[in-house]
Length: 461
Image (cartoon, rainbow, N blue to C red; front, side, top):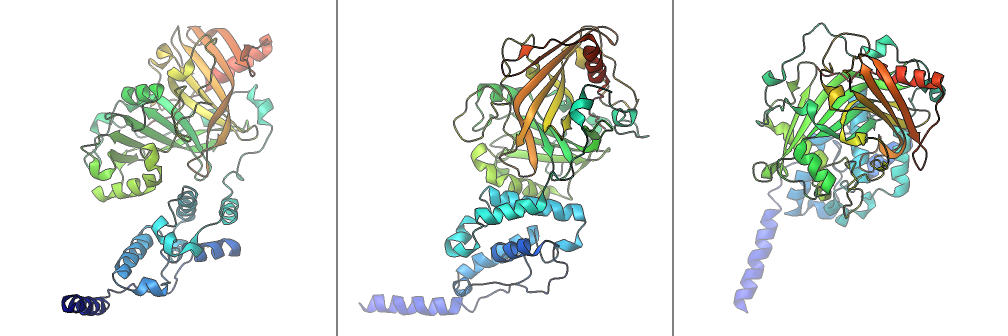
C-alpha cells in the first residue's frame, strides 16, 4: 500500500510540475479581418476562430497539461494555414480562395478537426450554417448572360477567343522544364494523355482538364482505383475562363499544370503520391522549397478514402463506394458510330444559361499535327481522315468541391468527319434519351460544322 501511495504522490507532483511547462500561445489584435456579412462572421467566430484567428479561446480543460500542448500545436498550425484575423490583408482572389477551401473542408468533414469536436461540440457547423456560408460565396452569380442556346447553333467564336493566349514568347521546351523542389520531374508527354474528367471551377473562374497516363486510364476503365496502381499519373491543366460574344465561356490564358504520380513506396511520407505544380508560360516550379507538398497533402487529406483523388473519373466501371467514379458522364450507347470518350480532348466550353458543358474530342488522325502550342490565330486545320466529336453534358455540382461543376448526363454527341483539308464530308448528331440520330437541315448542318471546326485547341505554353 505504501508503494501505491508514494506512486500516487509522485504522480500528483509530476502533474503539478507539468503545469509549469507552458509555452505561450501568442495573442494579437486583429489587423485585417476578412470582410464577410455579419451572419457569416458569426459562424466563423463560433466554429473557426479558436484555431484560425489571433485570438486565444481556450476552455478550462484546454489549459491543462499535457492536453494544452496538443491544443497549442493545433492553434499554431491552424493559424499558419489560415488566419481570419489577417486574411483581409491579402488580395481579394486569395481571400476568396481561402473561404472556398474552408467551406470545402467543412463540407467534407475535415474541419473542425474531429478530435476537436469531441471536446468542443459547440463548434460543429450545422447544415443551416453551411448553407449560409455557401450562399454567401455564390460561385455562379457571375455567369455570362444571353441566349446562348440559340447562338450555339450559329456563329463560331470570334477571333479574339479563338486566338487564346497570344504571346511573343516562343513555346517553352517541355524537356527543359525544371523538376519540382521535391524532385518530381516534369512529364513532357502529358499533352498526349487521355482525359479522365473536366471541371468548371466557379470559385476561381477556371477550366480544368484532368488527364491520365495509360496506367491511370486502364485503372479507371477497369475500376481498380481504390487504391490507384503504382505508376498512375494525373495531369490537371488549368486555364482562365474567357467569355465569348456568343454567350459561351471558353478557355483563355493558360494558368498551370499539376501532376500527381502514384508510388506508394517512394512517396510514402506524402500519402503515396508525388506532387508537382508548374505555373505560367515559363512553367516555373511552385513554391520555394520541397515543403510546398504539405499544401498538396493537407488539401487532399479529406479524400483519403478515395486514395486522395478529388475528381471522380468518367468510366462505365462499377466501383463500390460513394461518388468514386462518374458513371453518368460515360453513359454513351454502344450504338454510336464512335466512342469519343476514349479519344484525346482538344478543348471545352460551357453554356452558363443552359448549364451544360461541352468537350471537343479528336481521333488519332485529328490529333496529329494539331498545334496546341501554336501562336497563330485562326481555325485549326485537320488532316484527311480526322473525326471530331463534340460531346455535350448537363452539368452537376462536383460532390467533392463546392464551387466546381463536372459532367453529368450526356445530352448530345456531334460528329464531323474531314475528307481533305478543312472540307467536311459528313455531319451527324445524336441526342435524346435514346441517342437516336437527328434529322438535321442542310443549313443547320453547315452552321454546326463551321462552329465545331472553328474551335481552337485549349492552349499550352
